Image 1: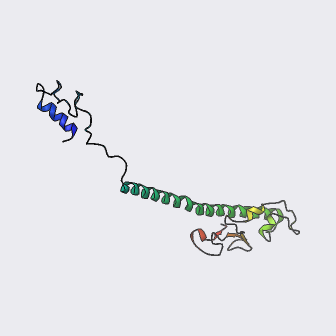
Image 2: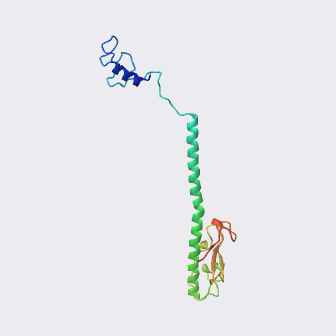
Length: 177
């Protein structure tokens, strides 16, 4: 019987008035002696469990590892999506810069490099329209400039993460709209 139950039972039974029993109704030397509220000292043989078992430690390590793995895939996988979105924005920006070149010179550039340095045959060139670093996609591959485009006067294309035509997801081609 644990010490808490013993103290409650001692009060209920009422050992008061007997030899070796205090006025509170608890036997002297009992686990609850000296306290009137019934909550006495713990018995030395009843001790709290200290530390963690090996199973508990392994379980916590596995749970933490799972959370870290999940978070890492979400964080690292977001880099590819960010590059795709950046490539889309860069393609649209280059389309606007080519349009500015066309309005100033009256013709389309022969290559995207004409946006950076003035070609010898471009009358009315007011550039530079772009920096050389803007002519590469987020994967470091130069954008492709096609004249004529598919149903348009020109196309600006990034081949995506695989740097080759076709593909899906992050490897898909990103074209001007």
